[in-house]
Amino acid sequence: MKKINIALCGVGNVGSSFIDLLFTSREKIKSNFDIEINLTLIGSRKGEIANNDFQGQIERDILKVPLHKDIDIVVELIGGTDISYELAKLALENNKHFVTANKALIAEKGPELFKLASKQSLHIGFEASVGGGIPIIRTLRDGLISNKINWFKGILNGTSNYILSKMYLEDQTYEDALKSAQELGFAEPDPTFDIDGTDSSQKTAILSFLSFNGEVSPLKIYKEGIDKIESLDLEYGKELGFSIKPLSIGVNNKDELFLGTFPSFIKKHEILANVNFETNVIEINSANLNSTAYQGPGAGGYPTSTSVINDILDIAKGKIFDYSNLLNPIEISDFDAFKTSRYLRLMVTDEPGVVAEISKLIAEKGLSIDNLIQKENKNQENIIPIIIVLGECSEKISKSLIHDLEKLSQVREPVQHIRFID
Image 1: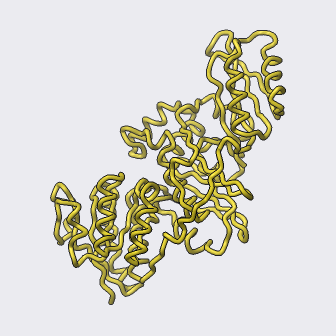
Image 2 (image 1 turned 180 degrees about the vertical axis):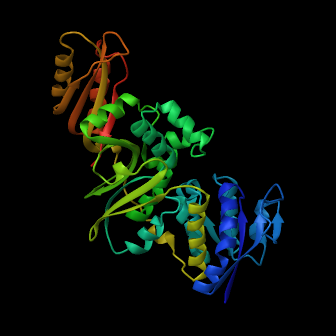
Image 3 (image 1 turned 120 degrees about the vertical axis):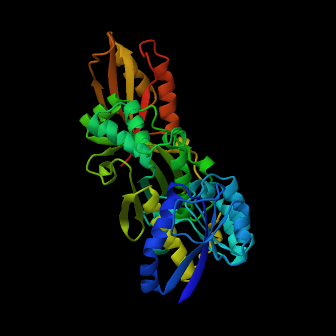
């Protein structure tokens, strides 16, 4: 029987779940794979853990963990890019494989760490960094290795999806939906990284790296959060036959590669439109398989820990993947050139000629109107919503149009802009 000694750093929600899952699954792993995984060391600055089954050593100094000679794999479940980055480097420099659930670390420091791992013939496991329990990393790495990826689109942030689902399905306000997400532990007390698109952009960078075989920084990904979405927009979207989702995309179209994460309208019958609350989903379109979709829990202690254990088993079975081979230079297109149809909501004074003024500006930009709906507004006297569905146009042109529309005296609020993605 092969024996693997591992050290764990980080004993929060995910770390505690990992310890529990490892102990409950050890016998099955032994029986199925003839592998014994021994958790012999835990790095915990508090010097204690809430698990009576663990009989190994506790190290208060996290950065001393990789220096222990009898450790084969260091598992990092701390988060962030400060001590986790130092820990990863130390692990690799001291001939230890490294497994993490840390999307920020892989998205921002991955290229450097992959090169270091390659020099040492070591493996970095990061399945849990995208999609929680969904095996999307190994799907791209192994299952679709012979396929050219045309595009992917997915819901990668459970918090944002939960909030928009509550607003769409239960008519909650954004504020009430966010409060509910925080009470259930889906959103942090400070939810900024979830709702402003930072979390999704990091995961989009990782998926793009694997999908398009090139080095991708999260800073190169167009990012827009969900905090400007209002209940009105979800209501009008329903009338048009669309659901709204926090979507991440990577589109490899001939000589153009567009990467972004933003709230989008999706037709109600589409797979992604019907994935609700904290669930994640990723749809991948490839040259030989057309589209395949992968859905499951995108976060949580046990789903994440399942992916971490699968990475450990890969290493125990001798599966070492050199990710540095995928660090090719690639050209990411300016998102201003990205084309799609668009939803605009204008809050205007109810007076003659306003629709004509708006239509004139749209015509001057050479754009087509697929739909125009004038609504009643019961909340503001003499202010009405006008909904416009624009035909396909670029980001640059749509931004120019919105700028000009907002200069009209009849337009009383910033124009709401949401993309349609099919």
